[in-house]
Image 1: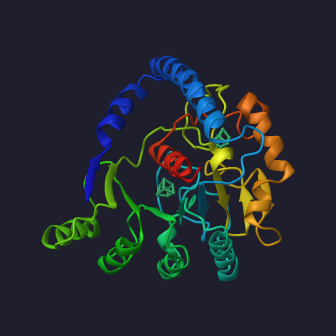
Image 2: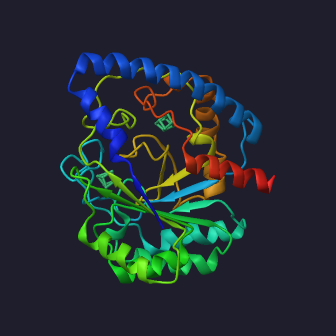
Amino acid sequence: MKIEDQTYKSKTRKYIEKFPFLHDFIYSKVKNLRAKKMDIEARSIINKIYNKKACDLFSHVQIETISKCNGKCSFCPVNTYTDPRNLEFMDEEVFFKVIYELKKISYKGVVSFFGNNEALLDKRIVDWIERSREILPQAVFSLYTNGTPLNLSKFIRLTDILDEFIINNYSDNGKLHSNIEEIIKYQETSNKNYKNVTIRKRLENQIMHTRAGNSPVALNQVKVAATCTYPFHQINILPSGNISLCCNDAYGEQIMGNIKNNSLVKIWNNQNYKDLREKIYSTRQNIKICKSCDEIQNHDDYIHKSKLIDKSI
Ligand code: SF4
Ligand code: SF4
């Protein structure tokens, strides 16, 4: 088990936020420089791993089974105060349609059992992940949670079946919640090392990415022209069965298809996706929802997924 403190970096930025002009100046300079670097990296990844105009398969399936979160994170478009979505649950039939379709293609990529939500608020999810593990023994299973609905029994069950289990402990005083402390104590006395678990201390109130323009607190709108790798690797399924553009499309503004009336692979290769990939490859400014998005990270899980794809080539 790893315990990471991510509050230090955020606190530095929080300090700069006290001086908005300074913040805007530093932030836009840094963002633009990083965007240029990331653009070169992303193009080389897209060119190397995928065929620019017709990548055959996703490497990351994200499934949101409940449309709500109980979190209060100021930077998040779905925090409990500002989320405009209605409460919606994915039908069991839809969930297992996805899982069995993945089985049919012997899927070895990543399956994330969360989206813009707190997945553990869905009381069915632990059972469903356990059943999915039997159906998809080779896939990489991932779950991120804010930890609040977690108890020891769920923790033990989940650590047995997940490859990656991230517990984001949000609090501005940097303290761990009591249930998370209990889990850490349990781990210290057990024989298992829980290598698949990371507990991250994170700040609840801070400014982060614009999240496709939907973050309630993002400051300036830095226009990023870079391409983006998401439509080349991630398929994002909402409780209704709709496929949204990516995990930053929190409200499902750009719908690529619906799993109830089509297969994942067919949707992934439909004309909507092909057109979109062509547009975003030249610049994200070609796409309405992407225009205000400053997501420019090639984050760890992406690199992990690229490696998975490399292996299967
Ligand atoms: S960041 Fe996570 S925990 Fe916080 S409100 Fe958003 S979905 Fe919920
Ligand atoms: S630019 Fe942003 S909204 Fe558009 S696909 Fe990439 S991450 Fe998603």
